Image (tube, rainbow, N blue to C red; front, top):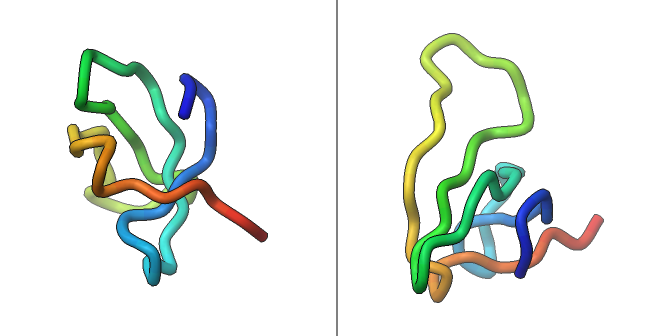
Length: 53
């Protein structure tokens, strides 16, 4: 995975996130949809799955 890739949390996640930065084994991600209260946060790379349409 690389910066700007689209991902989901887990294999069954339904929400789409964009990777903002990667620091070792952690990625800072943000939701791709504008929603009240949405904000960037960090997740382990192991917990992310590439987004496939």
